[in-house]
Length: 287
Length: 250
Image 1: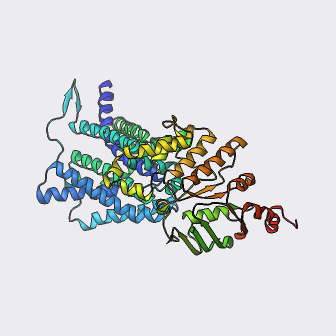
Image 2 (image 1 turned 90 degrees about the vertical axis):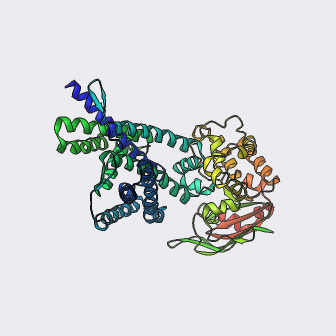
Image 3 (image 1 turned 90 degrees about the horizontal axis):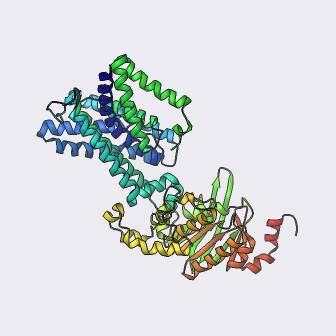
């Protein structure tokens, strides 16, 4: 029993660090632009398909695939920004969100219809044995993801607090109007934020695909759900909150899958979100 | 010579004509006061000049160039900066960062290469920020979060932030609102000091003593139209102005 708890906790933290990467990108867009980008996951999915294509055609190695994944996700993210968010920059956030939903459907249909197969293999991140630690197993992929999540968070902190771009982005958070009137180009900041968030998402997509060793069109929906859920659990728009929310989500899923079964796992995660939104403290809805 | 010229500028909101065929000229090097009762269109005029609203009709020229359709952040780098009636600082940034992030004059932008613009490159900016801090009386407070400043300090920081863009024209939107007599005297000095450096000032203000003391010329708006223009002394004696302010036949 105790052994199960410990093992579940390790597995949960492993899953949570993948969610953390997804949630950080999601939160960056919401935090700076106050917009929910539902097409975040599908853009990542396209990035992963691009990578698996490069792998199958040219036999490229993992490092190249990671770069392809990030670059293609950034391109797809830029496409989403141009189509869904640039036209609604001063308008309604709901309109932008609905537009991003429409684009989600478009990208998913493209993946389903245009590709000859749905399921593609992705090269494994690591094909050795998992680490054995006093009877508990830890997957090496999980350690890589945890490390990547930590490095990305540190790098993001540096960008947001030390670079001109980051400080301009935070100025936009405080007052988009004053930022514009102080000569900060809000469209450029918006594009930059989308590129940065998509790059982080692309990295997350690469790590997830490489540890699942496959890509399916479902990866888009999966990424959006996990990222959105973790962001909301973490209090909408707070980066440390998103990481914490992601780890909590991972833990709850791991434990409920073990004790209650896979059907109840997702149900419990959504129930938790509902409870927090319905009766949670005020900080849930502020930054 | 006119630095800023509005020709027949209108801005309608639905059926409301917030400004209606406004002609206004701000001459280089002057301090022009823009006054008028509440709802007379002063704020709309500022918002149209800075590009927040496109005008429904008319033409705006700045420094000999047509800027009627220019984007807001472009107008700033051309040389139009403003402060707000309700303070809008970047509260989550430090005092220093508030000024740094606003250094967006065309010259500063050009001086920052692509890489240094995105990756930092703070050294060249430091000196200018030091001067601005001294000007705003905020030396030594540079690492304070802007949201932690007192009201008067926030107003001074906003003033300095507008100057960080090295503007040719500074629009001050009711800078004396909420200030006491001592602070208004400071503000008066600061406006004159800015003009000494060659910045043209358009002062939108309700506080008549300040307007009459500091401006070279005054334009009066009512119902979105200019009803008078002249020296402070001429305006004080102007019957239409007294009528607009006091109502009835005075």
